Each structure stands twice: as C-alpha cells, then as structure tokens.
Length: 84
Image (cartoon, helix red, strand yellow):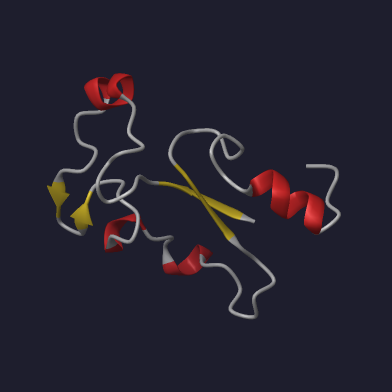
C-alpha cells in the first residue's frame, strides 16, 4: 500500500489552518500545482511506483494521516490485513 498526500483540484479539502501555514499548496510549480491530485508533480516517483499487476494500491490522503478521510481501513479489512 502506497500513500500520497494531495488535495482536490478545487482545494475544497484544504483546511483553513493548513492553508495558512502551508501557503504553497495549490500554487503553480515546475510540475503542476503543488500537492494537488492528478497533477504530474504529485505523482509517485517511477522507482517507487506500485506494481502494475494490481497487487498494490495508492491511498490519496488530504493530510498526514493515512486513515483520516481515506478508504485505508476499508482496504485493510477487505484484504484481511490486521497488523501494520
């Protein structure tokens, strides 16, 4: 399971507090908008990409936690993973 922190293109999931303290989020950069899902610069580097056979998944998360506002718990339960 891979995780990557990024926000919706419209930044609706960016909290006001995080927006104040991380003023670069959503700004245009060399590889697209910073920390915005679907932008090239928010992708996983090629050397660490998930397996192409579907055995690995990517959890997109709007913050540091891989559990908050994600489907990680659902994926772990459905694949019978009970220990991290």
